[in-house]
Length: 113
Length: 112
Image (cartoon, rainbow over all chains, first blue to last red; front, side, top):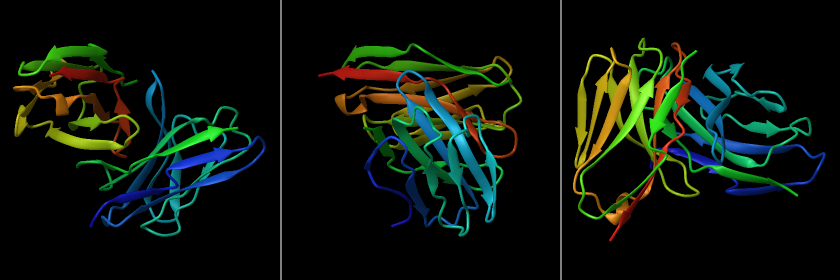
């Protein structure tokens, strides 16, 4: 089955902790993206990567970090510097340049305790 | 700066009705527009992608149109069913990086 997987489905974080959200794709896509979804605010871009070993900040990158060591994987770390991390996080992938359909994973819901 | 707006924010219709969801964007220099469906607590499912050279795309009971000059797209759902109940989002790419700018979505409820 081709697609995008995200894990875990639910994640709980204590104050001051860093947590890492996993995103894996087997669609052979060069580009991968992380979005954050909050009620009433739509989706906002956190980070994106168009090629292995390269990534750029999106609109709300503060308090987050990423890596792109493999084409298939684009993990997102939510650091303690992110003051309001409770949200639904969505990973996506697509062809470089965005000329075609973008595919999304099932999401990870992060809650701060 | 590109802005995407969807109207209405919510819509409730009886089963069997044909309905139209609207999406508008401020910068007409787009090369495609994508419509997604999102069920509660789930990821996004791509429904239709319209390239800038196209005016329409159809998939089953769904038809999406694109008018770049007026900055509008519509998603037409024929003979709505309770299973169509979901949030529908439109999105356009920003620049040539593929990063998407989303509307706030229209939450549709189809009553049996």
